[in-house]
Amino acid sequence: MIDTPRPPATVSVHGLVKRYRSGGGTLEVLRGVDLEIEPGGFVAIVGSSGSGKSTLLHLMGLLDAPDDGAVLLDGVRADDQSAGRRDRLRNTALGMVFQSYHLLPELDAVENVLAPLLVRHGPLAWLAQRRAAHQHAESLLTRFGLGGRLRHKPRQLSGGEMQRVAIARALVTRPRLLLADEPTGNLDAESGRGILDTLCELNRGDGLSIVLVTHDPAIAARADRVVRLVSGRVEDA
Image (spheres, rainbow, N blue to C red):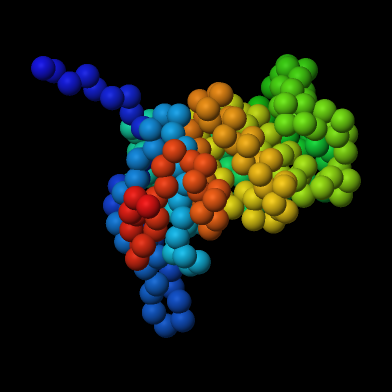
Protein backbone atom coordinates (compact mmCIF):
# COMPACT_ATOMS: atom_id res chain seq x y z
CA MET A 1 0.00 0.00 0.00
CA ILE A 2 1.30 3.47 -0.88
CA ASP A 3 1.20 5.96 1.99
CA THR A 4 -0.63 9.19 1.27
CA PRO A 5 1.70 12.09 2.13
CA ARG A 6 0.53 14.13 5.10
CA PRO A 7 0.07 17.86 4.63
CA PRO A 8 3.06 19.76 5.96
CA ALA A 9 2.98 20.93 9.56
CA THR A 10 2.04 24.52 10.10
CA VAL A 11 5.31 24.85 11.99
CA SER A 12 8.08 22.44 12.87
CA VAL A 13 11.43 22.90 14.56
CA HIS A 14 14.38 20.56 14.23
CA GLY A 15 17.42 20.39 16.46
CA LEU A 16 16.98 23.89 17.87
CA VAL A 17 19.87 25.07 19.99
CA LYS A 18 19.97 28.46 21.71
CA ARG A 19 22.79 29.78 23.89
CA TYR A 20 23.16 32.99 25.87
CA ARG A 21 26.25 34.52 27.41
CA SER A 22 25.95 34.50 31.18
CA GLY A 23 28.66 36.13 33.25
CA GLY A 24 31.93 34.70 31.99
CA GLY A 25 30.36 31.60 30.47
CA THR A 26 27.64 30.37 28.14
CA LEU A 27 24.18 29.15 29.13
CA GLU A 28 22.62 26.62 26.75
CA VAL A 29 18.87 27.07 27.13
CA LEU A 30 17.69 24.82 24.28
CA ARG A 31 19.61 21.65 23.46
CA GLY A 32 18.31 20.16 20.26
CA VAL A 33 14.56 20.74 20.45
CA ASP A 34 12.34 18.89 17.98
CA LEU A 35 8.64 19.77 17.77
CA GLU A 36 5.97 19.58 15.10
CA ILE A 37 2.58 21.31 15.13
CA GLU A 38 0.06 19.87 12.71
CA PRO A 39 -2.43 22.20 10.97
CA GLY A 40 -5.27 22.93 13.37
CA GLY A 41 -3.32 21.62 16.37
CA PHE A 42 -3.43 23.10 19.86
CA VAL A 43 -0.21 22.44 21.77
CA ALA A 44 0.63 23.64 25.27
CA ILE A 45 4.28 23.97 26.29
CA VAL A 46 5.01 23.64 30.01
CA GLY A 47 8.15 23.49 32.10
CA SER A 48 9.83 24.97 35.13
CA SER A 49 10.77 28.63 35.30
CA GLY A 50 13.80 29.31 33.13
CA SER A 51 13.35 26.10 31.13
CA GLY A 52 13.32 28.00 27.83
CA LYS A 53 9.58 28.05 27.09
CA SER A 54 9.52 31.68 25.98
CA THR A 55 12.82 31.27 24.14
CA LEU A 56 11.33 28.42 22.10
CA LEU A 57 8.22 30.47 21.31
CA HIS A 58 10.31 33.45 20.20
CA LEU A 59 12.33 31.22 17.87
CA MET A 60 9.14 29.75 16.42
CA GLY A 61 7.83 33.28 15.93
CA LEU A 62 11.03 34.34 14.14
CA LEU A 63 11.71 37.01 16.75
CA ASP A 64 15.12 35.48 17.44
CA ALA A 65 17.47 33.16 15.55
CA PRO A 66 18.69 29.76 16.76
CA ASP A 67 22.38 29.04 17.16
CA ASP A 68 21.74 25.71 15.46
CA GLY A 69 18.77 23.87 13.99
CA ALA A 70 15.91 25.10 11.82
CA VAL A 71 12.37 26.53 11.98
CA LEU A 72 10.07 25.52 9.12
CA LEU A 73 6.73 27.06 8.18
CA ASP A 74 4.59 24.88 5.92
CA GLY A 75 7.66 22.77 5.18
CA VAL A 76 9.84 25.71 4.12
CA ARG A 77 12.74 26.90 6.25
CA ALA A 78 12.02 30.33 7.66
CA ASP A 79 14.64 31.20 10.28
CA ASP A 80 17.40 31.75 7.69
CA GLN A 81 15.37 34.12 5.53
CA SER A 82 16.27 37.80 5.22
CA ALA A 83 15.06 40.19 7.93
CA GLY A 84 12.49 41.63 5.54
CA ARG A 85 11.14 38.20 4.65
CA ARG A 86 10.88 37.23 8.33
CA ASP A 87 9.00 40.46 9.02
CA ARG A 88 6.54 39.62 6.24
CA LEU A 89 6.02 36.10 7.58
CA ARG A 90 5.25 37.49 11.03
CA ASN A 91 2.77 39.87 9.44
CA THR A 92 1.01 37.24 7.36
CA ALA A 93 1.43 33.67 8.64
CA LEU A 94 1.99 34.24 12.37
CA GLY A 95 0.12 35.96 15.16
CA MET A 96 1.65 36.51 18.61
CA VAL A 97 0.10 37.25 22.01
CA PHE A 98 2.21 38.00 25.08
CA GLN A 99 1.62 38.21 28.82
CA SER A 100 2.05 41.98 28.51
CA TYR A 101 -0.50 43.44 26.13
CA HIS A 102 1.82 45.89 24.32
CA LEU A 103 -1.09 48.14 23.32
CA LEU A 104 -0.32 51.68 22.20
CA PRO A 105 -1.83 53.96 24.88
CA GLU A 106 -2.70 56.79 22.49
CA LEU A 107 -4.78 54.53 20.21
CA ASP A 108 -8.27 53.19 20.83
CA ALA A 109 -9.16 49.48 20.60
CA VAL A 110 -9.91 49.50 16.87
CA GLU A 111 -6.76 51.48 16.05
CA ASN A 112 -4.61 49.09 18.08
CA VAL A 113 -6.07 46.12 16.25
CA LEU A 114 -5.46 47.78 12.88
CA ALA A 115 -1.77 48.51 13.56
CA PRO A 116 -0.40 45.34 11.84
CA LEU A 117 -2.39 46.07 8.69
CA LEU A 118 -1.02 49.60 8.56
CA VAL A 119 2.48 48.13 8.69
CA ARG A 120 1.61 45.62 5.96
CA HIS A 121 0.03 47.99 3.44
CA GLY A 122 1.80 51.31 3.97
CA PRO A 123 0.10 54.74 3.83
CA LEU A 124 -0.91 54.78 0.14
CA ALA A 125 -2.18 51.20 -0.18
CA TRP A 126 -3.93 51.61 3.16
CA LEU A 127 -6.42 54.06 1.67
CA ALA A 128 -7.85 51.33 -0.56
CA GLN A 129 -8.03 48.83 2.29
CA ARG A 130 -9.23 51.09 5.06
CA ARG A 131 -12.99 50.46 5.00
CA ALA A 132 -12.70 46.64 4.80
CA ALA A 133 -9.95 46.63 7.44
CA HIS A 134 -12.05 48.66 9.88
CA GLN A 135 -14.99 46.31 9.38
CA HIS A 136 -12.77 43.29 10.00
CA ALA A 137 -11.25 44.81 13.16
CA GLU A 138 -14.63 45.81 14.54
CA SER A 139 -16.03 42.36 13.76
CA LEU A 140 -13.19 40.68 15.68
CA LEU A 141 -13.62 42.94 18.69
CA THR A 142 -17.38 42.42 18.68
CA ARG A 143 -16.87 38.65 18.51
CA PHE A 144 -14.69 38.92 21.62
CA GLY A 145 -17.37 40.84 23.52
CA LEU A 146 -15.89 44.30 23.00
CA GLY A 147 -18.51 45.77 20.70
CA GLY A 148 -19.17 48.48 23.28
CA ARG A 149 -15.47 49.25 23.76
CA LEU A 150 -14.38 49.95 20.19
CA ARG A 151 -13.36 53.55 20.87
CA HIS A 152 -11.97 52.98 24.35
CA LYS A 153 -8.26 53.48 24.94
CA PRO A 154 -6.22 50.96 26.95
CA ARG A 155 -6.44 52.95 30.19
CA GLN A 156 -10.24 52.61 29.97
CA LEU A 157 -10.15 48.82 29.64
CA SER A 158 -9.72 46.02 32.17
CA GLY A 159 -6.84 43.57 31.93
CA GLY A 160 -9.05 40.92 30.34
CA GLU A 161 -10.38 43.43 27.82
CA MET A 162 -6.88 44.59 26.91
CA GLN A 163 -5.80 40.99 26.33
CA ARG A 164 -8.81 40.45 24.04
CA VAL A 165 -7.76 43.51 22.07
CA ALA A 166 -4.25 42.02 21.83
CA ILE A 167 -5.68 38.73 20.55
CA ALA A 168 -7.81 40.55 17.98
CA ARG A 169 -4.70 42.45 16.85
CA ALA A 170 -2.84 39.16 16.44
CA LEU A 171 -5.70 37.75 14.35
CA VAL A 172 -6.47 40.75 12.15
CA THR A 173 -3.87 39.62 9.60
CA ARG A 174 -5.61 36.21 9.38
CA PRO A 175 -2.58 34.15 10.48
CA ARG A 176 -2.46 30.37 10.28
CA LEU A 177 -0.64 30.00 13.58
CA LEU A 178 -1.12 31.82 16.88
CA LEU A 179 1.76 31.81 19.38
CA ALA A 180 0.66 32.76 22.90
CA ASP A 181 3.18 33.35 25.69
CA GLU A 182 1.46 33.14 29.12
CA PRO A 183 -1.56 35.09 27.79
CA THR A 184 -3.48 34.75 31.08
CA GLY A 185 -0.52 35.36 33.41
CA ASN A 186 -1.51 38.90 34.40
CA LEU A 187 -5.25 38.21 34.69
CA ASP A 188 -7.60 37.15 37.46
CA ALA A 189 -9.04 33.64 37.29
CA GLU A 190 -12.34 34.63 35.66
CA SER A 191 -10.70 36.78 32.98
CA GLY A 192 -8.14 34.06 32.35
CA ARG A 193 -10.85 31.46 31.79
CA GLY A 194 -12.56 33.81 29.35
CA ILE A 195 -9.36 34.27 27.34
CA LEU A 196 -8.76 30.52 27.28
CA ASP A 197 -12.34 29.89 26.13
CA THR A 198 -11.73 32.33 23.29
CA LEU A 199 -8.54 30.54 22.24
CA CYS A 200 -10.29 27.14 22.32
CA GLU A 201 -13.11 28.54 20.18
CA LEU A 202 -10.62 29.88 17.64
CA ASN A 203 -8.87 26.52 17.50
CA ARG A 204 -11.91 24.26 17.29
CA GLY A 205 -14.28 26.56 15.47
CA ASP A 206 -11.89 28.27 13.04
CA GLY A 207 -9.15 25.63 12.76
CA LEU A 208 -6.47 28.05 13.96
CA SER A 209 -3.23 26.34 15.01
CA ILE A 210 -2.14 27.45 18.49
CA VAL A 211 1.02 27.03 20.52
CA LEU A 212 0.50 28.17 24.11
CA VAL A 213 3.20 28.58 26.76
CA THR A 214 1.88 28.27 30.30
CA HIS A 215 2.98 27.29 33.81
CA ASP A 216 -0.59 26.33 34.80
CA PRO A 217 -1.46 22.61 34.43
CA ALA A 218 -5.20 23.40 34.33
CA ILE A 219 -4.67 25.70 31.34
CA ALA A 220 -2.38 23.22 29.62
CA ALA A 221 -5.04 20.51 30.01
CA ARG A 222 -7.32 22.42 27.63
CA ALA A 223 -4.90 21.81 24.75
CA ASP A 224 -4.93 18.76 22.50
CA ARG A 225 -1.33 17.96 23.35
CA VAL A 226 0.99 18.96 26.18
CA VAL A 227 4.76 18.92 25.83
CA ARG A 228 7.26 19.66 28.57
CA LEU A 229 10.65 21.30 28.31
CA VAL A 230 13.15 19.31 30.36
CA SER A 231 16.88 20.02 30.27
CA GLY A 232 16.49 21.97 27.06
CA ARG A 233 14.58 19.26 25.22
CA VAL A 234 10.91 18.55 24.54
CA GLU A 235 9.09 15.58 26.05
CA ASP A 236 5.40 14.65 25.81
CA ALA A 237 3.85 15.38 29.19
